[in-house]
Image: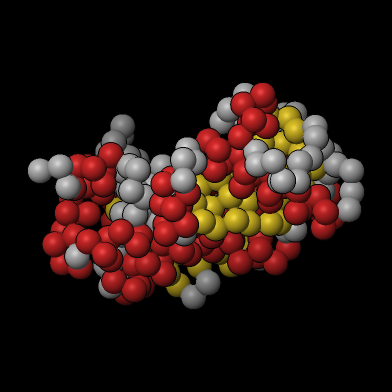
Length: 304
């Protein structure tokens, strides 16, 4: 069974650990990860600690994580609890929820996912320690993603850049796209499970605006509860956020493999620098196929 165990080590202990696992070291793009290793089905991540240079967090993930972690120190008290004990959730009754990934990334597609949460799924959420995908390491999401796709009923919409850019040209803004995609996956999932369960969305617009964005022929379900930071309040949204992130990372991996380069996420300065180099090497046609043209990043590339 996959496990997720954290310990803390001082600098010397950490150096010994990295030396021991040196032959298993793998490349990792995590922003705060200074060392990572893969030993069979087990992964080890060492995180930098800017607040205390003599204390490092080490995360063991995968099969046998607890046993391996205890060779180096005492695991921190587990924060994973049964879903009915997590007071942050407003409801743990059967439910569907949706979330999206990619709307803030210059490169790559949009991914919107609806997920079904019930008593059986609660055990998965508890054991894997799932929460909002933005708070989980991408390597961990990649490791648990296949299991979630298999065990969790869900529906996904993946909108690639050519479709996205065509929609923008037709006058669709981001919120209109989000609304239509969210409603689509939620309605499809509700049809599949054939149960009258509540629906939740991580709020990005008011309820009135949300419904105004929908197309005249689009299937609509009501009621829907809209909640900002919904992944903290409804486990179905938390599940959807992790699955959406996994599918997004898989798509980004495909693009990176196609061009034999690791494509950065987000829309910051590093993305601008990478985009300029990519344009110079691969040309505008290649860039256009994998980017969102309504982003300022695109405008800056051709404004000088």
